[in-house]
Image 1: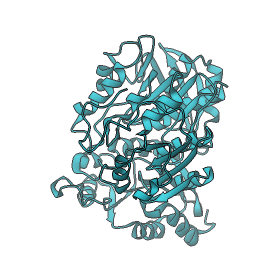
Image 2: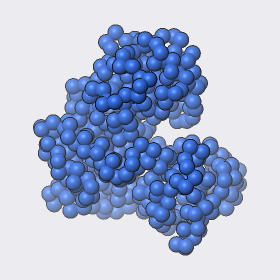
Image 3: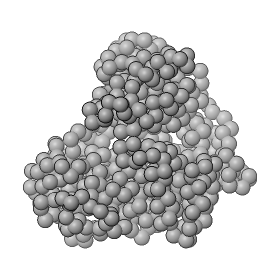
Image 4: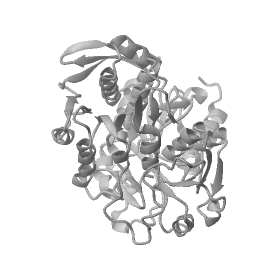
Length: 493
């Protein structure tokens, strides 16, 4: 993809490399505990490279994953991490140029590149690349698409920004002709501020949605759209864009595609119908329609309207790859879900505890809607940590007040570290509680994971559903909540 138009003055043009060095044997990953970087560590380990990594904090499931791979993880971003002189250094986008390890790298003669650049040049290369992009739904859609192809025997390569339960890795090279990759619009590295997905050499792209997000790097929706416009523009003429064209911004972006476009969504070329939800088993039966005609009825553990259309998009891409309806049925029926996406992590004393990654107001709303459909009229708690760069700002202060409408009780944590955000731009949990109260929703703000655990565990009753929503570790709340509920309720179910 070449170098960015302008690099920070402290970053030399060499030894930055744009293609994977064929003679590399030892590879060091700076920021290894990120989901994507951890996945890359697995790919490199599988390929026979000696892999090391460094990071500030490593917690499950990534810590467990890296330990299983036998990868040595060095604590902190210090210069000594590079003393073993690796043949290549991969710089994750968590890294800043000012970090001691970054400064040491730039002062050395060690070759380095970004994670997306390495993935594109070493693993995707000449494969038929299916890039799944969008503000929402890309992790689920990537995982489902990869599983549909895998269950049909196509043996694709894959990188997904979450841990799909059907796979023992978040990424694998595959031996087939397809590579399915989650395309992130976040910037690539401190020396390349372009979006990651521009490195992934797309032949087929799925575009699920375009909304304002990542307020730390994007100014507004128009700025976000520029990145998706660039992704669409690099599709080849014989490629395919599967786009959620019942959304106006996506439709406008898709109109400029240089290739064939398959629109999906309500009343589009590819559509879906939710036929039934079994709240006892937690499964959805749905139909996929192509040009108004049923491609088939399928059953899946993914529930809710947003998951209906995630699966419609996956069905469209898989059909382009040659799958038949019976192969789609087998894939959907055997898909086991994704960790941290409506994942039931325990049911102590008859209380169902669900872990979910939702943090953007649209994702929070869609997740709670899906859980309401999945669990029927059981009392639904939403326990939310404002942790992402966007949710810690007041960008969506008003929108969040509309996101929790399907919850019966809402617990809002104090936002994660806001010290780097100007006071007049900070999100207010207290204001959200007041706004929710005005809407008749029972809400409270509690400071700290330990205090939240104590309150929720004391007040929860058998048959309740507690959705813990956070894009981070939430101070270990998940584990402590399960333990407290077990101590209090035991076998009350």
